[in-house]
Amino acid sequence: MKSSVLSRLRGSVRIVVRGGNLEKLINELAKEGIEIWDVRSLPERKMEMNVQLSDYFSLRPLLKRTGCRMSVKRRSGVPFLLARLWRRKIFIAGFALFIAIIFALSSLVWDIEVQGNENISTEDVLRAAREEGIYPFQWIFRLQKQDKLSAELTRKLAGSSWVGVSRSGTRITIQVVEATRPKEQELRSPSHLVSSSDAVITQIYSERGQPQVKKHDRVRKGQVLIAGIQGNEFVVAKGEIKGIVWHEYNIEVPLVRKQNVYTGEKKERGYLFFGKTAVQITGYGRPGFAEFQTLSELDPLTWRSWKLPVGWMSERLLETTEIQMKLSPEQAKQDGIDRALRDIYAKQGVESKIVSQKILHEKTDNGKVYMKVLFEVEQDIAEDLPIVYDQGE
Image 1 (tube, helix red, strand yellow):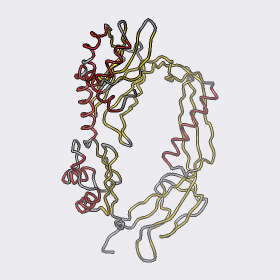
Image 2: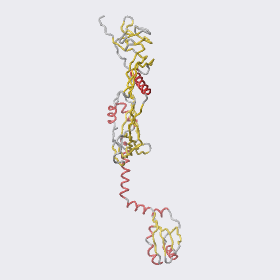
Image 3: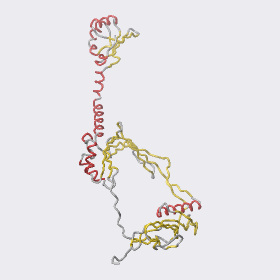
Image 4: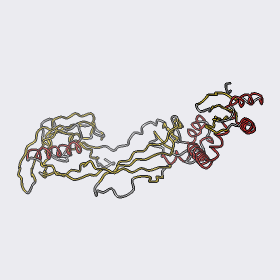
């Protein structure tokens, strides 16, 4: 006979029968209407068969009449599965509680990010969002629809043309598009353009005002380059003037450079994190080295495209040591000149042009290279100087 799905749901027992009159036992089972299946003969007058759990307890009188004995080889079916689960009820309850906690944590708002705001403060955006029910630890299902939230925030935030609200897992992102305002014209008093330093003029272009110098003229700091006068009126002088300016640098570079490098030794630590709280699980004890750099990596639990605020954080402590790199005098000299050039570009602008450089003095002493270097730089030399005049004139 072949078992049915219903028989498996009700439960079945695989038994081994031995001794006595096995043929008579089979006949008695058929007479009593007890269903058996997967019957298999074994050596030494033994026989295996499956019987339903409900019929198992009816076998004892039949076994006694036929002189057979029985042992259970395997139990299967839903009743036995439920019995095994019941014996592990504490584990099952703990697992169910863990799933419920994960589900609850993933149903909360954990982080709110504001993007795109420049003139509107983040605090104002968060305050308006809170009024609409968007705040940390709010239930996600209690939030209004995103199009309604967007409309309400746009209405409440003065200076915004559109506010978008989107959700990714437990994070809410508020995208602010600020309204374009016409640029306010800066009110400036009439002024001259004067030289910011001693220089030789290489280029002069006057857009407004009267030029007072020409190309190749040598000028001093503070000298008027373009006067803020247009006809009989005072104006804001406007133009572009470039000139050769001299910059002198006293450079000092050590011949031994110290640098931190990794040794290859490391220690790893593991943490279980919940939101912004982390509990150390592995890697207790001191690292075994004094100097190290710490690198952290977060691996949150994910469900579909959601990142849950629960996961594993790995922390690596990498041992570092200080090494000394020896430089040749030529390398040290080039390093010092490069630093001076970076300083010039940072102060005078990247549009400045290095015309020439000349080492005025150089010496090596006490493990250092000392230099005095003169740079000729073509740069913008114009700066504003307000015109002070008598209004009664």
